[in-house]
Amino acid sequence: MSKTESTQALTPPFAGLLRFWRQVHQVSQEELAYRTGSSARHISRLENGHVSPSYEMTLGIVNSLGMLERDANHLLIAAGFRAQGEKASFAAPELKWLRKAMTLTLRALDPNPTILIDGSGDILMVNRSWVGLYRAIVGEDALKNITNHFDLLFSLHNEFTGSDAYTDALCLILMSIQQDVLLTQDAAMQIRLRRLLATPGIPDDWARRAAQRDPMASFRVELMINGKLQRFFSVSQTVGAMGPTAYVSEPRLTINTLYQEVPQNTLPDCCTDQWEHPLLAY
Image (cartoon, rainbow, N blue to C red; front, side, top):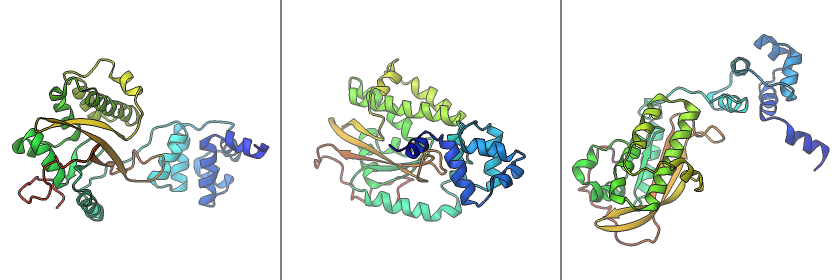
């Protein structure tokens, strides 16, 4: 590695991002210093990584450069602060195009049971295969009253007591929610976390157990369908901004799909038009 490469590798992320965005907006160090009520020398030291920015200074730079939310969050995270953003409603008129795109996506994923959830786990859309699968597990009437993906999965835990795969899946979900709470300080999610932790059968060492599993968006899960235990790959895909802040970009959407580990003709037929659900993407 050359001396130049070594120096670049040791440059703190904030310093590199600050220099990059200042140049993108064609603002000199002197001008940025004036806009933020600082000094050119301090801006230079920030860009060289000799000093760390305060929260107020970071926000001052964001506002002075007119940075959009995604890029502002990159800078905040690089400075050691939590990302910020206003909640966005999936039902907002300006997101009509996104709702259409998600409808087409969920339909295309049939016959694999698929749902669309927001950052709180609330269910926004489902495909017909998902309706058929959980109709066979919880019953048609109960299914219509289910509004949260996490609540649904944890409500089934008693039926799978002794299934290490299912317990592992719940521990991974808890770990994901716990880290989300620590990063976003979302009070509603903190309440949901406490409720889910009170689910009978959740091991006391759930965090350590989750930490020993691969922290991936995909994992194995077992479901009892018509008296038969079936194994699936649960695959989650984030829908949102690209880059480090994808997990906080509003609206925070996730597509979750179940794929049979060993494909069999044992799932309910997804093609029947008789299955209805308030959130069916059709």
